[in-house]
Image (cartoon, one colour):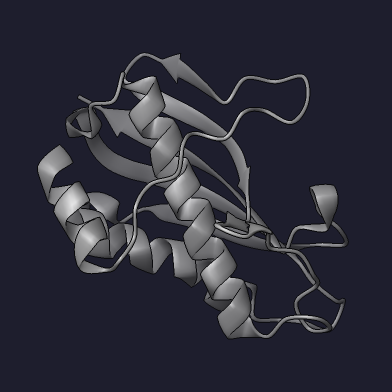
Length: 154
């Protein structure tokens, strides 16, 4: 699967970033049996953090792009946890997405679709997962989106 993911990333003009270091007192991931729990990955792109509130500063499309960036960071953490071998990734089990949004913003699911859609594009059926998408009054460092994930490893 590792070669397939790399090829699909390249087709989209994307690459995985280095696995982001924790910003506080936690670890980036924890193995429990064949499950890998990846800590929340905040929205950041090549030019730095993607900040702002959905419904005020950013529209749904910009939020979905921020969520895509979170998905890339999640995969980078999976790669790091597997010693560089994404071939051990069996499936995405669950994502929990947090959207920094105004009280009247109701398109959190469409925002988190940015991550969900990318994972399915890259992994096929192994990328299909259960999910929660919720609003947050604010997120660390003012980022637009944060997503945590649970992954099954072979």
